[in-house]
Image (cartoon, rainbow, N blue to C red; front, side, top):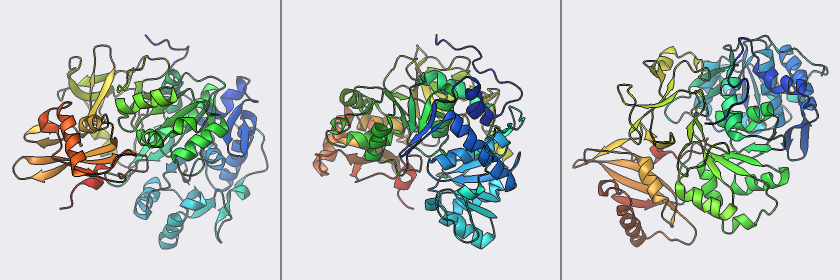
Length: 524
């Protein structure tokens, strides 16, 4: 049993997420504690509160009030954090948008969010400028970190000079608090609406598994438009008494490790691709002697047992995998409070009804494959998709929320990922899970990263082909491909062994770091 603290997941009827993260810590006497770290700067809790409230007054002067949607786009900077938290305190509706999305996706998001004001970093501003010139939206652009162009505003000019405490809006717990948008890899991005209750109903889960201390400095490598980074890398550590470290620029292995060393980061959140890229660097574990990291976390896609074991052997600390979806966030508990099982996603959180069900919504026995399912009345679930009620309804069956992932649970309650329902394909009449074959490939010494895709074949339905990135010291060659195929035959069923293995310098990835199998499918 995992012990839970008093008040665990107790959501009051009235709750404001901004007040919970910014104001409540001050009532606990944490005002002098660090809140945000970044290269060249630090804000205490008191200083963060002052900036947030000044910004909230400035946003009010722009017409942003309770229920008003507005866009935030850029990397993880103090300005973006302040602008987000200020909107939460006002009861407005900040929409976090990934800075890598293109003009077509942005046009959809601006229309879907109905946002007339956007606060944006200079490096991500041009597509919004083009949209504004062509369609007149968003009506106002505020530059977070640069001198504005004519007709735009500087973030500094928006800040009110009054830094006195500002009372948060008396929002309901189930009132919309913020929007995040999916990466758009399977169509136009979906606007996911979360309520103020999310910071308690899911925040308590994140805090429980992470076991934060006041000395922890937490860094997430993804933009805060990625909801896992927003929760784990910002809101939950601040609420728990730890502090957040901000990564400026791209999340290259060298940039992340340098930032971790310079800012004294102790807890890291990232994706499997990052950890694999780090391991590809020769002798990297000895190049950053000042690292204070005590553990890492991985989500987005399977990390792989081989990656975990190599990391543990070279760095000496654990990587905990967990499973989450944007419509909830962290659904499985794997961290310092749960004994680690490499390759597993962890166990269900206390008080969270998480089950493995068959297509008829019946529980399956231990180690049998089924659909990961969450009770539909869980308070951590999203409020809906922005302007898309039908899509929201399709996610629920018989009182269960099903995101479409197949898993199995062992006799001890640990979940093991099998694959997404829409990733499976048939070969020789048999169902094939790409994630299983990819994991087997990445257990082989030459393989750094792998992606498996179906290739239409008139005789067998689909042939299985793999795209592989090799580690340093290995060269692409037909003989190596055959050696890899032979090694796989000893690990997986013969019908799952790829017909062909293609070598690549790199695999395509989404803005969130997931491998894009669809980009590797043969063109019709």
